[in-house]
Length: 373
Ligand SMILES: *[C@@H]1O[C@H](CO)[C@@H](O)[C@H](O)[C@H]1NC(C)=O
Ligand SMILES: *[C@@H]1O[C@H](CO)[C@@H](O)[C@H](O)[C@H]1NC(C)=O
Image (cartoon, rainbow, N blue to C red):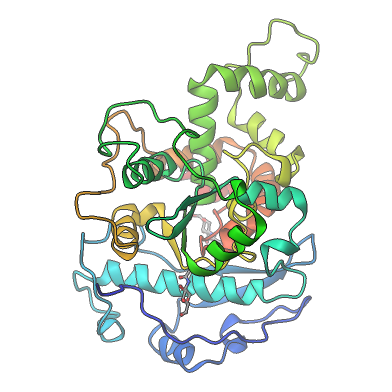
């Protein structure tokens, strides 16, 4: 089996210091960076900013223009990728996906090498570690750990895990997904067992554009799920809708996206519901060194890569999208983000800044001109 993601022998570098605003290219000096920046003159412009917590954050701009096109299925090699850049060959999208992997990898290494970032799960607070361990699923037969992120195809991955451990006959079995039964969580192991698995197993996770993930959570939970309307919706409406603070008739089934965002602004990221908790807090990419970070935007090919990499038997496939699945389109996202006062959106972004920066998603355009189109 030929691993698709190639090791470029990237070295961890000292990384930029707090408080400086720098160009990313000038800080990382390994040969491979020079090699790829020679062919990518304009795409790798990074700004480093200092966020409220004093963390160094990198915002990546102006790249990933061709992210919407799905990669060709199964085109598995990154050979000659340097040569093909710039040509509009069929593998261009695959090449983009490889570049994305490399950018993510480098950004995570650089940001995570900062002193104030956690370097192991044992340096997390007990609450942070608990959240993390409850989101890592274990398969001891195929030796992998999967950090699941709600709203990023996690039900489908859980199906795959259940097929791999024999609890489910096929990924297509028509049952409602039970998110706990027949799954093994890293939180159920002893410290030394956890240590062993983190060290020796293949570790992967999947990410998605942060605002798209939020919108997907909002539409699903507040549009469809009564328990969420009761548990969160009622409180949100009472808190953020004028004159409703003491209104007993509030049902919570009509939370607006703006009200939801107001609520998020007031929540502590470490105590949020997992459907809107930042991916950073769910999976702690600095404390756990993931071997692979797939994208929702390249779900099919990235999942196939993981299945190959863990040595899954050929009959185990990643499930097709469910027929009832309502995708969040670019237009829908644009519509919802533009129904928000843009000031509110700008206030929200810092809460998810690590998800944008570590996973190389460009920040949304928050100008009013943008919303006129
Ligand atoms: C990052 O690169 C290293 C070495 O090149 C590799 O071992 C690791 O799997 C990569 N991680 C991700 C998340 O791509
Ligand atoms: C935002 O959108 C407007 C209008 O489409 C455009 O003129 C502007 O350059 C964009 N800003 C950024 C930062 O992309």
